[in-house]
Image (cartoon, rainbow over the protein chains, first blue to last red):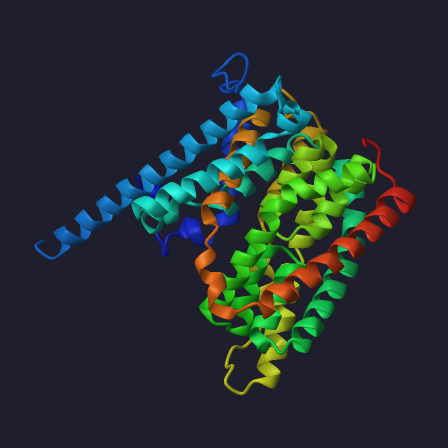
Length: 45
Length: 363
């Protein structure tokens, strides 16, 4: 729930770059271990 | 308890509104992708092939449509915390790193450093000079010149903080940046086609010329995959200079302005450094050594496109013409003159560096 609290005081707003890296790292990790992709949750358009 | 309850209720209402804002942005992104797929195989009026109209164009248009809807319903300010163009863009850029070989990044960045040093200093000084000729106030001159020379919206905000500019000056420049950048997503690839530019040179041109990073990635995507990669590398390299520029500006304004009590320190350079670039490089290293694969058709590639789409939608949502009326026509003319200068200079330098001096394959 804390992640949803984006107000101007939020750590995630002021550290947007690191937060972006964190989200990307989670996606890359889930993809590397196979949770995302052909054999896991398939993401297509 | 009686005091805290209304506060927490207010906060949870705010959370619901912001969550609804994210959902709204996601639906607009979904609309953009649906249109992209629908028109792909068709020929549009004026014999425009549907496949040339890539998703950034539809995403920006979907954002502009959302912008109109939010204005009519009066909800724009309420969902504005969900309009996170930079965040979505940075996630997309780090994911893009997972599909680029490190050698390409190193070569690209080497050329990009030289290109950025020439462009940032030339465009900043030219912008400062032209704005002076038109008699613009010195803080507006600094914010506008930095936005034009470095990286648009985020540079305007960083420069605004460094020179203690008025909030209206920063939002005015931000609006100008977006207003000029939106059509450039379409115009620049068309010009590059007309000039028959290789994708590498075109990407470097977009990265050196278009002010805001989202529009750079958008124009690159429209032109081709290599152009998208090159534009992102060049723009990310240019973005890293913002800390240095902000530091120098703060130093300059502190020395000439007795009211400015700000003490510029070297830490400002690190504080303003775009840390997502480190994630971008790390992802590229992992891709190069074969630990991860973010190439075409992978989940990482698909999510990268989704995050870029969300960023382009947010660009359309951010546009607000109300700020433009407050300062008259002079800054608009200055902005356009410097943009033309930047476009021509960036084209010449991108061609010299990336076609003649350090040609990189793939275009």
